[in-house]
Length: 79
Image (cartoon, rainbow, N blue to C red; front, side):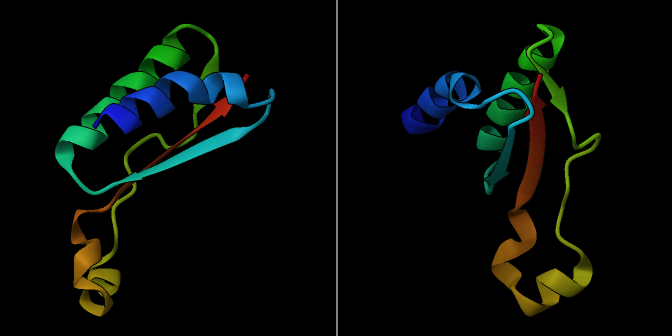
């Protein structure tokens, strides 16, 4: 968890304007941290959230790869 916190803190400074950050999480605790970090950056005018809603795997994807069932994808773009 500490690694994720450090990454979310440093990532915006590592991106150039127009750069994109995509996070795939597999646990709800991790997804919550990513969601809050992305929202904070968007509210601060430093980024724009690209995924209006979290992206989840389709039934077909889960059927072919059961481990993907818990995956959640979020993306943002640095302003």
